Image (cartoon, rainbow, N blue to C red; front, side):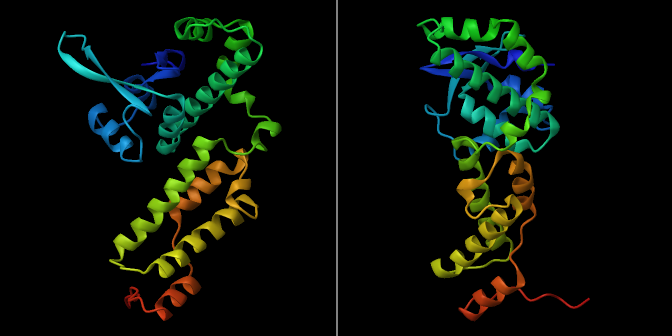
Length: 240
């Protein structure tokens, strides 16, 4: 079984590289790696920007394709799983990212990418403690931090997908004005769950609650009634 420390393997251009197959193994995903990774790239990731294919060989010597991902993509894939393993991986990546930023800000990081990764993986006693006790590092201060751009963008994609899935499930063909009612409905619910006025104010501590809400979201009766008044043939509940 791949450990958290084995996931960061090197660099791709100027980014830290995360081994996609290693993450798949750590997350204990039931689906085989190739199909899983293809499904994950459908969330809007771009080859050459978010991940890079690498020719490699299996333990049996057969050729196969591996993938090196950026830290941002790795964090998003960990979030998508919505499992305890996914949360552990996501927190580890956040910890590694913060440690790298701290080292860069103090000008103690070597110049070359290879040296940067070597230092990041070796670490000092403080770094090792961060990794070993990553679960205990979720302090009140961290929970009150705003979401980082990768997390915020991922929630935006989840909201778009939720609206599309609802329309597809009910075979709805809606105008832009009608669709805007659905987006307003789900965004209003997101803000209520996160206790904020706008999505940009969502805090780290409410990320999981918001993610669960988006997964379970259905439009309110009032929203559906307004859309129907605008001319949509909405589904009618069947009598028992």
